[in-house]
Amino acid sequence: MSNNKKIVVIFGATGKQGGSVIKSLLGDEVTAKEFKIRGITRDPSKSNAQALIKKGVECVRGDLNSKDSLRAAFKDAYAVFAMTNYWEKQNKDLEIQQGKNVADVAKEANVQHLIWSSLVNVTDLTKGAFPHVYHFDSKAFVEKYIRDLSIPSTFFMPGFYMSNIPTMMMFPDPLNPLHPYLFILPIPGHVKIPMFDAEDDTGKFVKAILKNRDQLLGKNIHAATDYYSPDEMVQVFNEEFPKEAQKSPAKYKMVDEQEYRNMLTQSGMNDEGALELQENMSFMTQFGYFGGADLERSLKVSIPIA
Image (tube, rainbow, N blue to C red):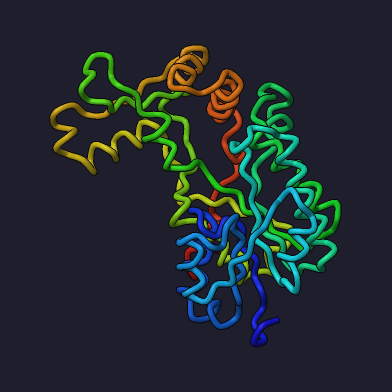
């Protein structure tokens, strides 16, 4: 270990989640002294990686598809924060293999704290009613694999990405096409959704997990600030943008599942992805995003030291 600091490996160092963790660790006097950060990125020569290097972060190239690459990245590591991106290839088997590679090498390297970005297994939770939410199920499969290997681990479970709302769920209002603030989902307006801001929230929760390792080994931490319904989100939007709301307030509209899939494919998504996202939304009505779990324990962990 360098300068007696514990090495923490952070995947996605130049992205929103990994970058949030790095910022949070560097910004805390305690963790900045305790941990040396090794950021994993595809190209350490790029400007965003070089900016991290200037802040004292060791940036190295890492490939989730190569165990040899991961062995080099995990050398002497105390902790690892790892995530995978299903949507990059839209391939659940690939995502599972990448996660298993992380777990296998973490076991080999005797990593003392693996923090895995996980989600619920929707197929199991819903008893097969929604079998196509692959980007949840694949991460849950890896979580089970990590547990079976008895790796010291904690499972960070991000809530619903706030950034998805303006980019994927706000559609032009057919009654007012000049004002595209119609929030559309295939669920009732009262259904509660745990909201998560990747740039602000990831670091807060992951830092808390690192600081509270012994208490949180084997635990799932539900990373969200609160539960909000679509009706409440629209209300907040209108309060935050009163001028726009006065002209044409944002509204929430529930559509049926087929209509929602059609809207997604019309915006450029393939049929498989549209079905997956529709089921992703629909299962929350009956089962809840986190399977009905509240946020109390997770917020108690994160808020005092955010």
